[in-house]
Length: 294
Ligand SMILES: C[S@@+](CC[C@H](N)C(=O)[O-])C[C@H]1O[C@@H](n2cnc3c(N)ncnc32)[C@H](O)[C@@H]1O
Image (cartoon, rainbow, N blue to C red; front, top):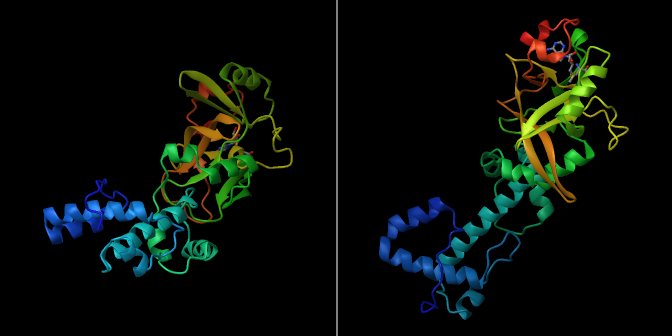
């Protein structure tokens, strides 16, 4: 065993298993085990795609013939595999069948995560994760957000409904349009003739900005009926929260307004967010703005 070498202990092993193992064995030997297991991992990195270790290889490298390190190695790999699967589901929790499909695609021969466990481990992505998430970036680029449909709501005009449930924290879609300055946006407001307004004003890092979804279709998606601009207002029943992100596109950073689910959203529910505008600041007094109180 390569106990004369100094290695940092493995931080990859799931914390629960590590704690239980330490409790079982007492401090001294467990710390030594950690150092040895660190050496084991350096020799045999446990990645999602690494192939299982044979006993022959383990012993030839000077490690004990029993299964202890091998079992720990497998649990590190399992955690990495779960992480890999979850990284492909950052927008919202996957279904068990989706995880099963992803596992099949990987063609792992053993040490496969249990799809139900992966689904249970899903957590909403942090803002930093979202800002660099390749799946979310692709959906902003192609405007092919799934789980959404347009519906006619009579006097409200069109609106967006969920055709699949969204768990709290899921990324639902973006408010798509060209980002212009607040001053340019306010100028555009003056030119709006109809009842509907499609400008989203926001402040980010001291900048006064506006997403122009009034200019429709946008230059980048001339044939797409982009969804975000169709989401209606409610101050009392809002189920979406707009969040400003600096998305890391391949060509550089861009301001994006993303909608995240404020709570679990059910099938067929209308998506709504609080426009956060006062009657006075909206547009003139000629139009009926009672709906802003809804
Ligand atoms: C961003 S658009 C939303 C989509 C719009 N309903 C459509 O058909 O394209 C904003 C406009 O929708 C209408 N609207 C949004 N929420 C409403 C509500 N709760 N009640 C009535 N009208 C609403 C207002 O005319 C508002 O200016």
